[in-house]
Image (cartoon, rainbow, N blue to C red; front, side, top):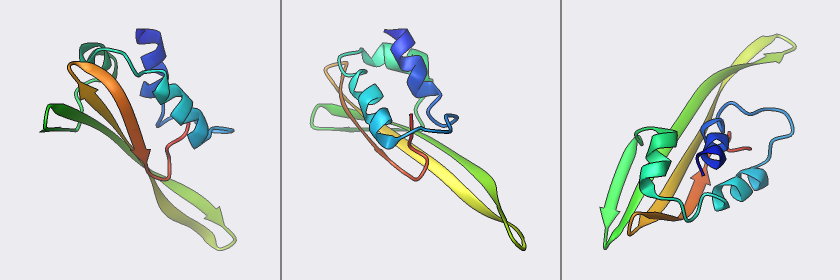
Amino acid sequence: MIARLMCVVMVATLVGCATSAGLRTKLDGINGLSETDLVRSMGTPQQVYETEGAKFLTYSSSRFVMVPTASGSIGNTRSCQITFEINQGIVVGSTFKGNDCKA
């Protein structure tokens, strides 16, 4: 179980042929894990929200990259936010948004 979560931990550092579809596949594989195992692997979430018996744990990453241009370079912020839905202590779903959400 923990091995599957390690892939998600590295989501912000993956490059190359990475795709958001690949991330969706990996996140779907986490469904059914306990909240405890998720936090053990991912660490403390940046945000926790509880409502009507459901809990949402949000993990965020961002990085600043320099993109070369003909006249020098420009900066660009890349980010990804992944939110896991927890119900009765079990991961039941996830969403992601950002321009750096790839696996």
